[in-house]
Length: 277
Image (cartoon, rainbow, N blue to C red; front, side, top):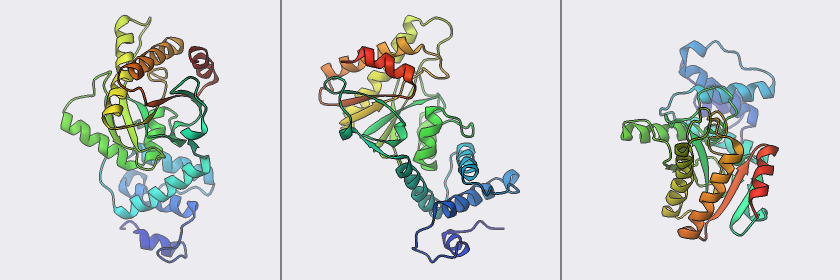
């Protein structure tokens, strides 16, 4: 049975083309399309509960390999994701107070931050996290940007022909995120004590992102805490590298760039608060 197109989705919802769909209608349309792409999932029932539907849709998006998809899907997906982000509440850089000139500290959801660009802590495959609903920054950014981002990253990797080295930066569109760009960088994986090479590579992540952002005319950039999650870089040591490197970059070539250190945990917030200002 062929997948429903956008017009069919409106008909099933009792609406005419051009009328606004509800979030539930968008969810159900997107879930049906993604289930139909994968024969092994086609018997999956769409949950009645809203949170369960949201989780199923996110999981299917996370599992989907990079590839083209119809414009009808993208139109509904984009409406859905922008409404989800608006419901979370968008924070604008203009509403934040600097911790010191040009540097900001903000605890919140980086996918709801309006700046020119945000930084994604990627893995060497560069196409995102495929674990359904995983709460890592890579998964969150790819989820709320939309399926276009994974395809863009896959094309970059196909052209490159090898895994992404640690310490560099790549740039893509941000699609449905409130920022303009996403910078992707692969941080060092720490096994045991932090080495001088780990520190050099982490500093290279921050410097490479700053250099690429400056090259692209980015005026405001938000960093996540690179390598401090599943890559096990100690948080205090990572923050020291981050602040030291960003300050040096602003002094040497990005004096007017505003930089946000985005943190998720209270522990990281307290660490950065002591280092800034």
